[in-house]
Amino acid sequence: MREVKVDLGEKSYSIYIGYGLEEELQAFVRRAGFSPKALLVTDTNVGPLYGSKVKKLLQAAGLQVEIAQVPAGESSKCLAVAEGLYTKAIELGLDRKSPIFALGGGVVGDLAGFIAATYMRGVPFVQLPTSLLAQVDSSVGGKVAVNHALGKNLIGAFYQPKAVFMDLALMKTLPKREIYTGLGEIIKYGIIYDAEFFAFLEQNQQAVLSLEPEAATHMIARSCEIKAAVVSQDEQEAGLRRILNFGHTMAHAIEKETGYVRYNHGEAVAIGMAGAADISVQLGLLPADAAARVNRLIAALHLPVQAEGCTVEAMYKDIFHDKKTVGGKVNWVLMTGIGTVISRNDVPEEVVKRAMAARI
Ligand code: NAD
Ligand code: ZN
Image 1 (cartoon, helix red, strand yellow):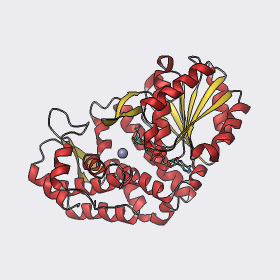
Image 2: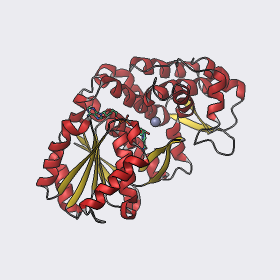
Image 3: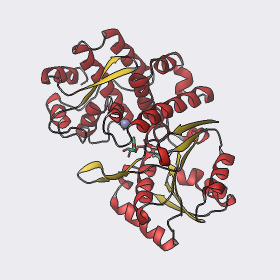
């Protein structure tokens, strides 16, 4: 078992990473001081697989647990589904100390976290992430949200969980493509923060792809450590936290142009990282062989470096409508080496368009 601490003063919490974790979860519940009534939010894929097992564990630790199962998929991250969960919470008589558990991928985590942040102005929240992406990204850092018809994650809050328990054994049922999407964000952590970790991924490709326990535990724990280090220095994204956006500027344009269906998030980020590396080379910030290493690792971990169904003109327009674009200036996170990035908002149009053209 590995424990990673997220250091946020009074809001600090631990992430537990391992196989099983039943005892750790029960011990945490017993000492947490929760009210007995609890809500376990999950989805229609994860609920039937693991819902009753987790419910029993929590009950054995003294909670009365009700399961709320939402349809699997991004469309559940909306106010209508959130309203159904508020109704359930009120009907069950959840009070200010009643915990809400999120058992599932990033959709369930973001949705349940949003309910926890807002129901009675905030109740205790515990993340039990079951997808690789949720384990290395969405369950760490405290961003919770639902989508609006006009844009993703537009209604949300910063709200930290009381603890995060990652049982890596649950990933045995995760579809392969969902593993690759998580690997996209994992590669990102190496690029933005840790050359040694990047080299670990290069040297252990087979173990990484098959989630071999030692490799999986290391890569998930290291990813959480890096995200935790960044978030604890900049919880509300005033500066440093923006480096987590590496690859995402172009990724968001690709997701938009392909209707959020052709590529899942990690795949779009992979293409966007190749694009950001290209811009870095064009500006003379990065040697070409470092960008080649990025592209090689992305491809080796079954992720794309080229996008179909996009045009340069449309993508270029999209980047100005990105949520992270402020005052008409696009903030690019660019590489100065493997493991180091800088932020630039003065990248010339022709450089961006050349990098986009090379990706489509
Ligand atoms: P997801 O929650 O839709 O999960 C992917 C699929 O895998 C779903 O069909 C789910 O039911 C299934 N699944 C999950 N765990 C499983 C398991 N153990 N066995 C079998 N099936 C399983 O998507 P995701 O990729 O986990 O997360 C994407 C969401 O996360 C997006 O909504 C995104 O906006 C959000 N996100 C949030 C943050 C943040 O900081 N809050 C960061 C990144 C992404
Ligand atoms: Zn991402």
